[in-house]
Amino acid sequence: MFRKVLILVGMVCVFWSCNLQAKQIDPNWINGEYWLGSLSADANTWVPWGKKGTVIINGNNWYQEWDDYDGHHSFSDTFTTSVQLDGSLDIEFSSATYNVAWNGNMMVHADATPDANNRLGVDIIARKATNVDVNDWIGRYSFFGHWLRWNERGASVGWGTLDVYADGNAVATWVEQGGNDYNDTVTWTLDDANAIVYVTDRQDVFLCEGGTMFSFGDEPDNEGDFGYNFFVKESNEPITPDDIAGTYVVRFLETSVFGQPFTCGKGTAVLRADGTLKWDAYYSYGEHDVGQITYALGPGNKMTFPGDPYEEEGIISPDRSLIFIAEYADVPPEPEWWNWIGGILLVRTVCNIADLDEDRDVDFVDYVAFGNQWFKTDPSLPANFNHDSRVDWLDLKIFAENWLWEARWLE
View 1 (cartoon, rainbow, N blue to C red):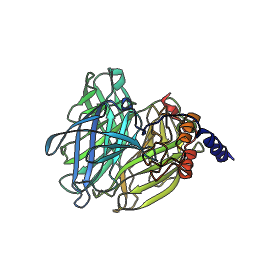
View 2 (cartoon, rainbow, N blue to C red; view 1 turned 90 degrees about the horizontal axis):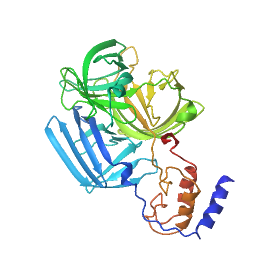
View 3 (cartoon, rainbow, N blue to C red; view 1 turned 45 degrees about the vertical axis):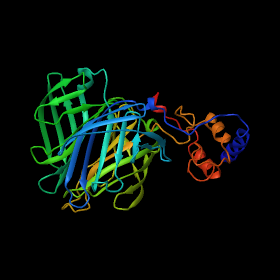
View 4 (cartoon, rainbow, N blue to C red; view 1 turned 45 degrees about the horizontal axis):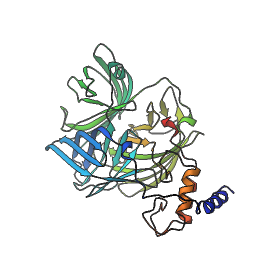
């Protein structure tokens, strides 16, 4: 009955006057300065690679600088954007298309197939924090680290907490994949003008909007590792299943304990208010995986998965637009090549292909626009969601599936 009502409304909307051009994302949504970090590994030799830098987006101009083991590099180009069926964003440069999960402050890219350098990996491009003071930095963070060995093939992860104190000290406590516990005390200095924390004998930490921060290595550290640490600030404010229910774009990099880039990929996840998480993911080695797991929330913005053999845990960003899930446990008695370890990012997208007026919800205004394009034959029309010969019943099905979507967490 519901879809029949939509169809009738659509027939009426055909006669409404509405001038539309091909759908483009407002550049103001993504303009700004960003931190860039990347971790990848050669798909055949397992040799790791890391880079870090900055991205500046101004209108339809993209400028990027980064450092890696080969030195300093830069890239600039113009681009256009388009929203995909899963809510991800295609950034279309003159030479290539760069697909990212996008939550308004962070872009996450993952290679579904090896890139031009035969590497599988993830890129995180996160908006720089602004108006930073010491109180933004002080507090407790959940953090996850993923490191790949440069000198000999191997990988490790760590999951724990970082306590930052006003006296210039910070204490990290974490467990690695084999179950061993560690702790470390470091000193820090905050560069509030540039949103950077300089940590003694450690990688610099880049502060980002949304209560997250990260560090990436662009050359092997003292132990011969490339890797990253990803931090999410902990909150005492309770989060309910209703607060996070919805569809998320998924990006991930997982390796075996022997350093093999086991898989890198993408997909979607649906979190339901009944406490279930369903996923539909595609892995770089060809598998298509669909499954379901039960989740629990708390305390604060933490997430757990009771009964899961890998003891996965997660943390929800304070703005509730991103969930980081850590995979860090080996299966006893001995680790096998298929024991993957790594980080999974669930990104709550601010884009929806059916949001034709780009006001971050899908309602009758969008349906009026959809009806105005009904049965028109132009693959570039915004309402031709599947990019075939015309706007028809297949596009209406996609619209109905997204009906009443809204980016309510932005409020």
